[in-house]
Length: 203
Image (cartoon, rainbow, N blue to C red):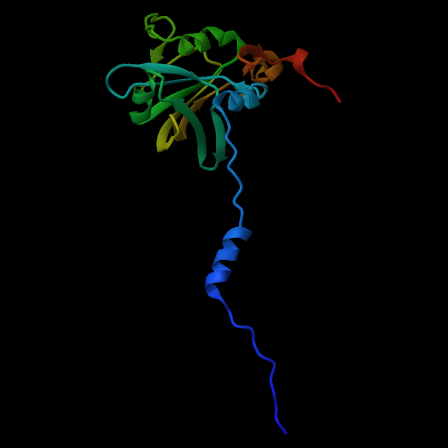
């Protein structure tokens, strides 16, 4: 008795390779324009801060809306600075910085740090130096002296991570520590805003 096995199909690797090229379709990547990206963030409010530093050749300052905390232990914060800012190179190479978290009453400081082509330290009544040498604005609602621990290039900006080494803020229980009293300064839709009792949403 003859034992016959069904014939196995012969693989044509060349044809399989050709077929696979037709079966795999890669999607066309989405293209987001700068205007579209800005529009997406336009209704996303952000707190306002002024960052100061002096790497050794004079004080610099800029206004930022990208400051946020990332860790309490260790106390780390992150922010980004645009390469178009005249203060960016100095802040990027500084060892320490002072991050001022502003209330609505310090709008003048926010505007000062956001105005280009001026000497932001011309009015000596607005600023002083800490014992450690960094320039700062005493009128700020709260400030954090921090040591830069990391820098990362990101597009046309630099993302900076810094570890807090000293803070100054109203103590718990102080009326000025209450947001309804301090009225934090917020930037939203290219306009300055204040937070307070009027902006509370009551459920």
